Every structure is written in structure tokens, then in C-alpha cells.
Length: 343
Image 1 (cartoon, one colour):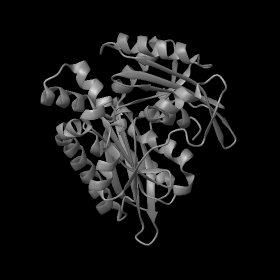
Image 2 (tube, rainbow, N blue to C red; image 1 turned 45 degrees about the horizontal axis):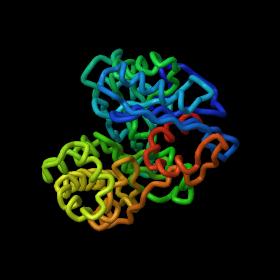
Image 3 (cartoon, one colour; image 1 turned 120 degrees about the horizontal axis):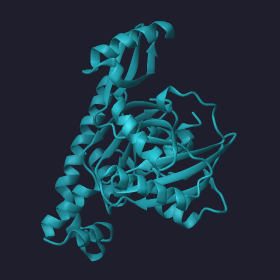
Image 4 (cartoon, helix red, strand yellow; image 1 turned 180 degrees about the vertical axis):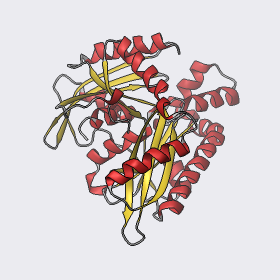
């Protein structure tokens, strides 16, 4: 999706950098591909101190300085908020005919001028018997992509791919769980402000959306329920110790909202495609919340596991394996972005 920034065309590299620009922190990873094996070569993390473009630019610089990345070419993403996502059912046709048809569909579904948007599409499934095809159409304003690219360029970097957070989760899953190629999986990435949902099968994204709910909402609720300062609420969220039951009870309303949104997403997918979501994998900083995995598993009626982001990766000697393993759950987006260059 939005394959190359500003319509550039590049050959596939051996080394790729993924840059995850979150609302709380910036994470950068450098990955090397050698045939079918992948190696983590660098990792950098920096806190974002503010919400102005220059604050993100400074955090990007610090993360890249720590990682000592070997190339200035990076892959980045934007939230799907403000992005138009449509699942279309069209008659079977050739790729040339489909290209022409999608020009019409873009004008039909996009509420602003075609020249204002960057768009892409993907054929999800073709049914020879019914002579139709299911298409994923994604479009967002060029302005959103250009603003993200400007922040990156001001940090002295060269954005290659600008895509959507939710979409690239499938890259991480595909590399680490090839044995589940024929399994329908729900990928949940729980961040500070947003939870990404991506339903994948055979390395295709059949459904994706962002929920405006994350760790920040949970911290705020703990603060309100226990009448404590922000920093104390954040500490208890991460390390509740003897207050684990009390904390979990306090945040159940937020988790209930999250659960409802997941239900709605899974129900839509299952009714649209006639296939059930078999398993769920969670990632992101908020996925470290105590009891979250068991709560989701009990209420979704499906097996829920933590996504092992680095399961099938090797590690460069300059990268601390201990640090990488301790924070790998937070690196799904950055890793997925780096892997995008190899697709």
C-alpha cells in the first residue's frame, strides 16, 4: 500500500530500516535479509517530548543516533485514522481492466479530489465459480503522507515507503509463523493511543482498522479510580504487584470497550468472507498489561498469544539480545516496516 513515497521505484535492498513514529516514542530497527533469513543489525529508541513536528524530528534523530543505522533510507507509516478503507466485490477481469475499474472506484468512494489522494489496492480473493473478485482499496490524503515525510526528512533521512501501521503487522507474522500460513489470525497491536487490528490469512490483509483506545486511556482510568497522580498510575499499570486484582478491576470498563470493538471487527470479517478468526496474537507496549492475554482468551473464545516479533531472527553482535528480547513486543510496527522493503 502506498508502495513507494512519491511514486519512486527501487530495487529490493539487502538492508532495510523501519521507523515507527509513535505518539509516545520513536523506535527504529535495521534488518538485513540473506536469502530467507533475517538479522537484526541495529535498534534505537527515543521518547517523544511534546506533540509538535520538531519534537518528533528530534526523537527520530536520537533513536537513529543510538542505533547507528547504516543507511538514511527508511520505511515509515501513518495511522489509518483519516484513511479510507473499502472492501469491494467486482466482476472477474484482467489486471489491465482492473486498473481502469479502480480509477472509477476511487472517484466513487473518495470524498475529495483524486489529485489530493494517494491510493492503492490489493486483490484479496478471486472466485472462479461466482466470477467475482474481492478487492481491498486504501486511500489517504497526500497531505498526511507528505507531513509525515517532512518530519522524517527534517531528521536527515530519506523516506522510501510510507504505508499504514495496521497493514504491515502481517509482515512480522508471516516471517515468524510460516507454519500458520493457512490459519486465519487476528493481529492486535496495542499502542499508547491506538490499537491496530489486522486480520490475515496466507500473508494477505483481509481486514484492518484502528481503534482510538490504548495504554493512555488505561492509565487515565487508573488515575481516576484510585485518585493518584499520572506517574503513579503509569507505574501501577506496568507493575501492579500486590494491587494486580484491584488494578485489573479498575480498568475492566476500558477492556470491555476494547473487547466490543474486536467483536465487531471479527464479526464483520466472518460475515463478509465466510471464514472464522482461528487465533489471536497481541503486540505493542500495552499488550504487556497483566492478565490481558487471559482476559482476551476467556472472552473471545479463541486462543490468544503474545506475538513473538523476533522468533525467527538472528542477531548482529552489536545488538544487545537481552534488550531486544525485553522490548520486542513493542517493535512489531518498526519490524514490519523494515520487512516491507523485502516484499
